Amino acid sequence: MKLNKVTREELLIPLSSVSGIVERKHTLAVLSNVLLETKDNRLWMTAMDMELQISAYRELKTEDEEAATVSARKLQDLLRALPEDASISVETKGNKISVKAGRSRFNLQTLPAQDFPRLASHQENEIKFTLTQKNLKALIKQVEFAMAQQDIRFYLNGMLWVIHESTLQLVATDGHRLAWGKLPVEGNFAKQEVILPRKAVTELSKLLSDADETIEVAIQQNQVRFSFGAIEIISKVIDGKFPDFTRVIPSGYTKHIELNRQVLLDALQRAAVLSNEKVRGVHLMFSKNELKIVCNNNEQEEAEEQLEVAYEAEELSIGFNITYLLDALQRLNADKIIVSLDRPENSALITVPDNENYKYVVMPMKI
Image 1: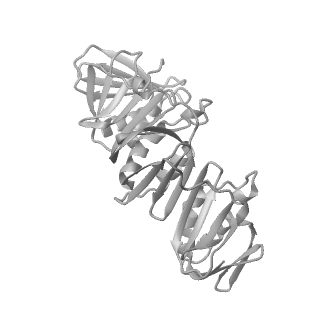
Image 2: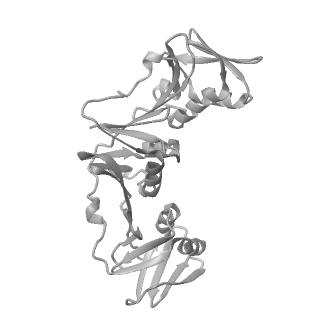
Image 3: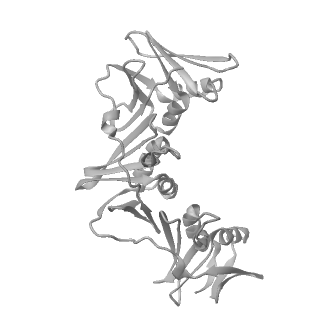
């Protein structure tokens, strides 16, 4: 492998795209490395952790087709330490890779490229569709926070992707709350469901742009592939049965309160300062034309906020984990929200007026 007079950014941009999944210490030493490949006048960089694989490329003139692996962390730290306008040369020599910039030279240890495991890029019977990166990123942001973290119910530690007819649905739940959203897609597909692991969702969300550029999604039986710009992500899926989310989303509620999202968010954030650090409970008390928000803690400190609301039903007091409410409100891009309630022991439903593409369910708690 030989690269002459390349800029720092030409190496650092693809490396930064893939390095987020590299673990510094791995039982398989080569997985602490990044795979460098030159082919078809492109420099490809690939990282993987046996469950998730990310590849990124830059258009570079190359004279050969070679491959090597080198420590992702060391190469990234080295490139970041070089001047922004540095002209860099890279060359493999035996089991070393040489990086030169001006009067600086670095020799890094390599491991054989043939020892680097790969996930197959294409499979038969895959379902493919495209949508804009901006829309997918916005939908993921509205749903991802409800994923569980290290739950023994492993299927909750990820996000459900459902492609059916001309709609993509994303669902996440940790058993205490559930976020659901959907987007239209071109095509008419038979129903297919996969659970994407948390790490894949996080990396995808991080790498997607806010532009109208497209992304191709290919859903297969045991993995999902995302292709956009100069990046390809391949992730294995979680083998498990996701809960029937349609049974969790309530219907038939009669109490619907429209609220200003930012006003409610600000009030909850102030009240949260004096909430119990462990329980994180908040009381929402609805009475005629008023919502009272109350938090207190073990030090007998109390916060109370009062908001004017259009509420005419009987008085209702219901408790929630305040963090669960804040998580949803912070990620919604809407001026108004609708909170739908029934009885104190039933879940609350948060939606956006005139928008059928998003629903958030949060269970009550006893305080």
